[in-house]
Image (cartoon, rainbow, N blue to C red; front, side):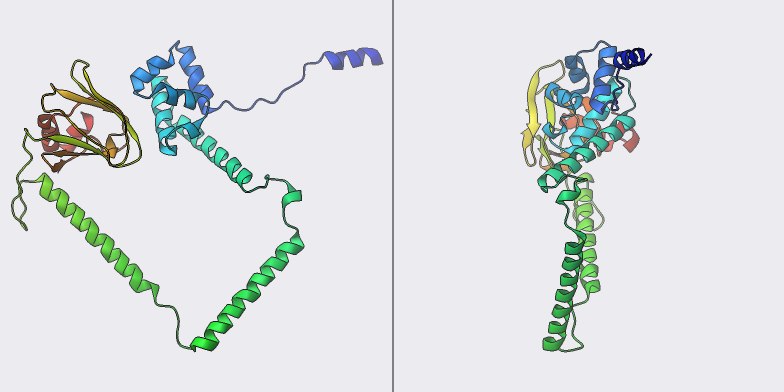
Length: 293
């Protein structure tokens, strides 16, 4: 009887704990269920294949930033029929977990290792020494600088900072109003942008991938534009278009005058016309129509 029990225990399969699938694994499995290649996802979402591979393997450090990791993962999720908000939350948790591990390693301590933590007595001694030092500084200050004096009020500085910020915001609003309207009641009339003016896109944030091309497929420019990079739409381009996942990172000017951006948020756009005529038409269109084009 004892031998039979030992044989049964040896033949019993070992139960292995399985960790929940990562966001990248779920995206990859959904793609494979649809029998789609990464090249198809890249073409549909305008996300480079190398970034899609990084997402599937949870190698988020290979992406330009945390914002890119979350935004690309949501776009990928939509293309394979998964809940984008659920995938985005999973990516945030993986990023947070990875950051915690990196912080623990860089600090030279492993979480949960009591052998590497200071003793309770040493911690109490350090706190007591810090308290004595603080009392000594206060006593020295009161003795040498006299009673009744103290640090300057922070209220005035805060009010001044708020006033400066409000003034700057008002100045920016006035500048945008003067470039967007033919004239204002408080200043001289400003000429409206001309449909024959030079269209210039300027990157205003972290690297953003963008593709400019003519209607029909002729590529004008494709690459990642960094903060401050500019691109001028050729004057002889026939019905130029734009594809990008970060339209909110580009300011647009026509003949040196600023016009509204393609989008205010990180919403991927594709096949959007960017000729001077099309951009001016977007500026004149109601907000709802502009957001849908």
